[in-house]
Image 1 (cartoon, rainbow, N blue to C red):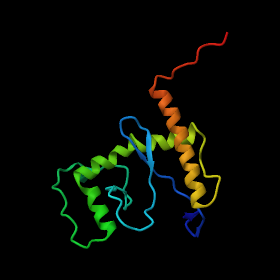
Image 2 (cartoon, rainbow, N blue to C red; image 1 turned 90 degrees about the vertical axis):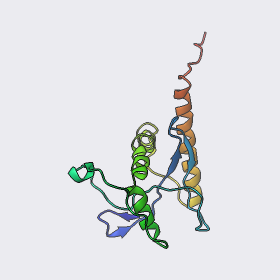
Image 3 (cartoon, rainbow, N blue to C red; image 1 turned 60 degrees about the vertical axis):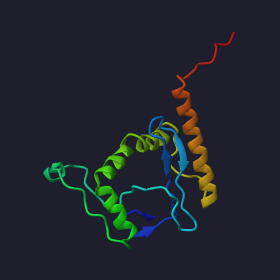
Image 4 (spheres, one colour; image 1 turned 90 degrees about the horizontal axis):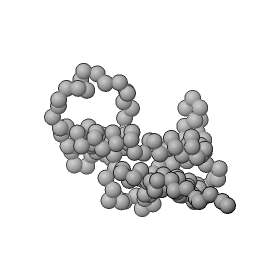
Length: 151
């Protein structure tokens, strides 16, 4: 990944997670498909930088964008998906589902960086972090049952 001022690269890992909307439990890790083929999952990922502030043009009612031509690049297809009303709505769900989970993992669980190196070890470490988060979340969802006081 580019590091610092973008003039050099560092070995880095990027954690991703699939999250169930209602329970906010991590239901899977997003992994690269080694064969390069389709996994059957329809992905909505940002491919362009956009500002956080809305302007008048953003509030205007517009028709759905034209579909990209056959043979369009992955970037063009993804860009089109995010310009549709369905794509905008689904992508906006990130604010209330996935992003808070990463905040909890970083601030509450204290996990800010991987301590191991190598794809296999990092994957295992991320699995353990996901399990820790899910255990904490399940405890919260169950009403935070307390143990009986000791005699």
